[in-house]
Length: 130
Picture 1 (cartoon, rainbow, N blue to C red):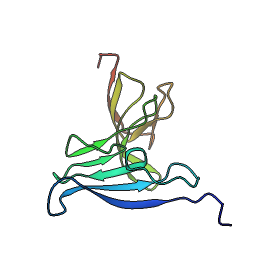
Picture 2: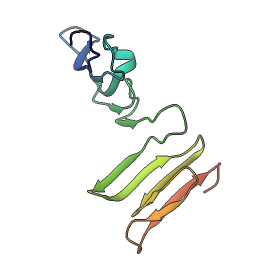
Picture 3: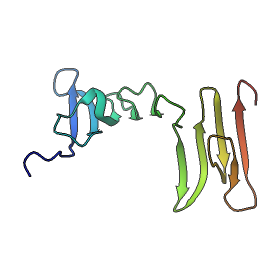
């Protein structure tokens, strides 16, 4: 069907300087519609000409930057094996951050769950207190 909404994706080079220098954007359409892709709204990952990598941001300010949504959803980094999180760095809410080893945050009610019912450790900051 020609009129059916289509998903779209692209890898784009946003030229910033001469000789093809620029930022590389991995773009995936957020909506199943017939609208065009938008580098500003649909970028999921960026590699800048300076070598910075951003996931969830089109303009990473550091070597590796991960951003979650603007709401209370977490912008997480997980080092894991299949079905097992070894290290988890993230946040929940506006002022709560954590680094957890062999455990994970089960929900926004701050319920932590051990991965292996044995050794686990976390550093948690909740409203300006460690």
